[in-house]
Length: 90
Image 1: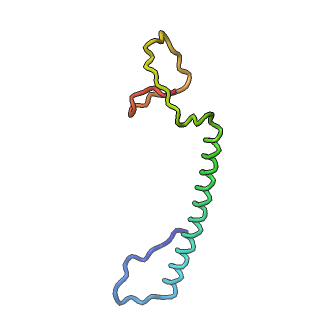
Image 2: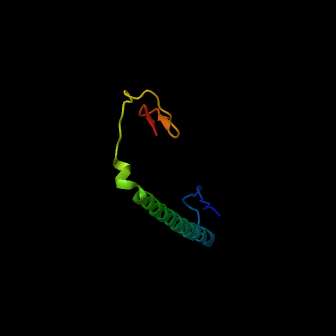
Image 3: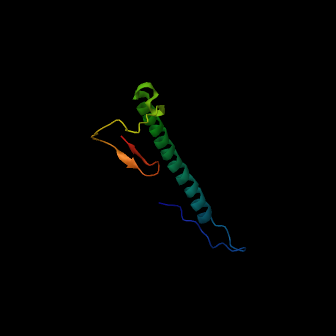
């Protein structure tokens, strides 16, 4: 159950046992959620490192540019036009 904050406190409101229990429950729930997210981030980091490690010769950092001036025809079987960079990425 999501945390249910009390947002209408008044200066003379009494703090009750229910209020403190609600706070403690919210803190506990946040820690459970944080632990789950930490595990997810760790798993994603492992997966990304694995993917990067199987790419040949630091392929991520190699950049190949060609203006295709000498090509008469080309068939692209996979790729897309990157509008932001105004280039075809295959």
